Length: 54
Image (cartoon, rainbow, N blue to C red):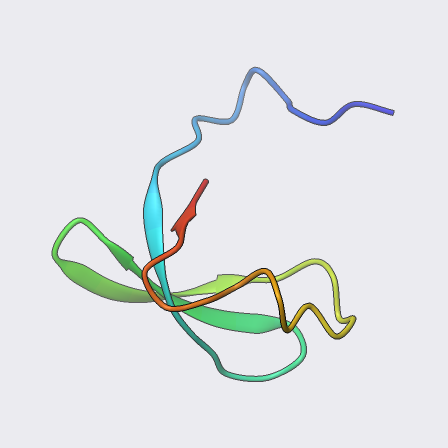
């Protein structure tokens, strides 16, 4: 299983809120953008406001 594809450039973002099971809002630079969350599970402990994401 590959965890990272070297052709994809990862960018650091800050978690803002979880919109639904598969979508989160993150702060990327100075913009708020929607991002895909590939795990639809509970994940209540992990994404908290201000947490750094890649």
